Image 1: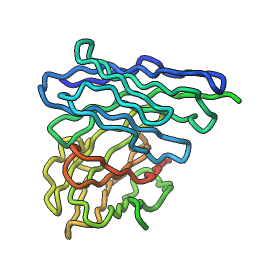
Image 2: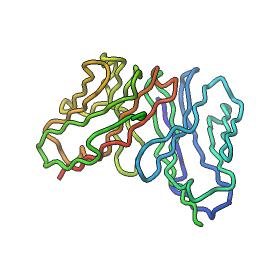
Image 3: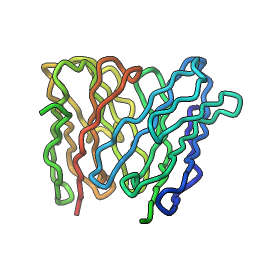
Image 4: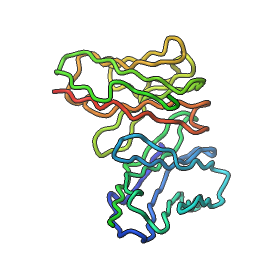
Length: 113
Length: 114
């Protein structure tokens, strides 16, 4: 069965520090997609990235970067030079059957000024 | 608006009351999803529509939950005889094709059953 584990329940760092959010997944599918979403206090889930299982290239978008490693079934997310506005709950998710998302429990990120 | 719109944003229901939650997806989006998010947890899949067809309702917790999308646009999630364990945020998302493209989420409806 598919499963997503975000072992870090809460992370607190001081602004401008780098922070990495871990995501480990389990699946027997050979083709799948991995996602990261951000959920600010307003509650809306904001899409950050989608990565398919055949593309192991790391991705960088501004201060955000993602490290996908199939060998360890991990899809970690790093924020460089964190800012207070990055404070939110971050979810990692995995597709099942092409239309369901299996979600991790989320990591609450607190950036202190 | 340009995004997924859900109404009401907040709903308080007395135990045993029926509720209806509305989702207005982004225009042109074929796929529509409902998820349930309990406090402090990740969302859980409830059901999936492609146009007006409900292709998967395996995540609906009980037969008290019912979802429809009769014209392939607006969707309604109905919960009959609400119970305290139904208290959660109900999230709607829409997209062009399953989850293989980006899905856009609404802000959710927070249901509290008292």
